[in-house]
Length: 148
Length: 148
DNA sequence: GTTGGTGCAAAACCTTTGCACAGAA
DNA sequence: TTCTGTGCAAAGGTTTTGCACCAAC
Image 1 (cartoon, rainbow over the protein chains, first blue to last red):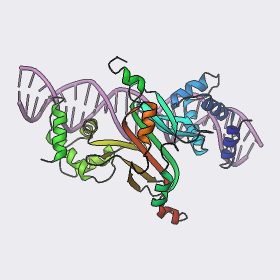
Image 2 (image 1 turned 180 degrees about the vertical axis):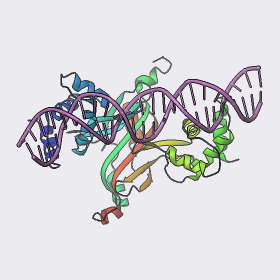
Image 3 (image 1 turned 45 degrees about the horizontal axis):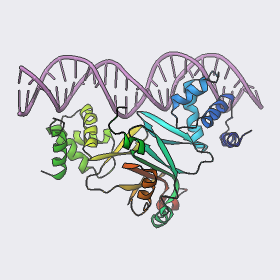
Image 4 (image 1 turned 90 degrees about the vertical axis):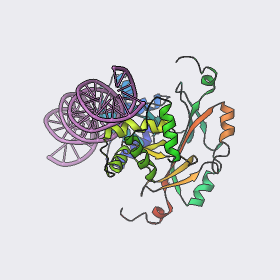
C-alpha cells in the first residue's frame, strides 16, 4: 500500500467513509497524472483504465481528495477548475505563460523569504498560499509574431 | 470627468466603442464599491441606482473593464468570479481569513523582493501576478471555538 | 439490515449568446 | 443608414443532487 493510499484511507476513516475500489482507481489516476488536470481529464483517465466510474463519482471524490490534502486547486482554465496532486510536493509558485499555457514551477522560499515576517506582523496564521504569475515564457517572447 | 472615465473612454474609442450611459453607471458603481465584488453584487448596485440595466449588460461590461485595466479578477467565492477595481492601487497581496472571510491587504514588494530576480532567471516576462494567502486572522485565532 | 457508495438523469448555477429593437453618428 | 448597445429569454457548460439500487460489514 502506498503512502497516499494510507493517507486517504485514514482521512476517510475519520469520516466513517471507506477507501472503495472506485476511490482507489481515482486516487491512483491522480498520482499518475503528472500534470495539472480538470475533472474531465481525470474522468478520461479513469475510464481508460477499464473501470465503470461515472463523472459524478469523480466530482464526488475531488472534495475528498482536497480534504485529505492530497490535491489542491490551482486556478481555472476556461471555465473549469484545475487541480494538481501535492503529496510530497513543497508549496510552489506557478509561472503561467499566457500564450502557450506552459506552466513552469519554482519553489516558494526562493522568492518569498519575508512571508513569515509579514505573517507575524499581521498576526495571521497561514494554512494555504497560492501564487500565480502570468506573462510570457522565453519561448513565446521569441516567437511573438507566430500564429499559435 | 474623472480619471477612470477618461481611461475607460479612451480604451473604448480604441475599439470603436462608446462610453454609454449604462457603462458609465457601471463604471461608477465599480469604483464606489470599496470591496471585492461579483457580477451579482455589481448588478444589485447599479439596479439600486435606478438605472434599467440588465444583468447581461453587466456581464458584457466586465470584460471591457478588465481590458481597460480598471478592474482585475481576484479569485472565486463559491462558484462566482470575484473582481476588484485596481485603478490607483498597486498590486498587492490578499490575506483571506478562512473563518470570517475578512480580506487584509499588503503591498507586494515587502514580501517578494526576489521576484524580479526569479523572473530573470526563468527569462519570464511578467504581466500579472496573484498571491492569495489563506488562514486565520488574529481575531479568529482568538475565537476559534465560538460559533459563527 | 443499516450504512455508505454509485450510476444515471435531471437540476442548479453562473455566464454567454441570439435576436430584435433602440440609439447615436 | 449603418454602426454599436441593450433587454429579454434561451442556450451553454460545468458541477451538484435526487433517487433507486448496490455493496460491504
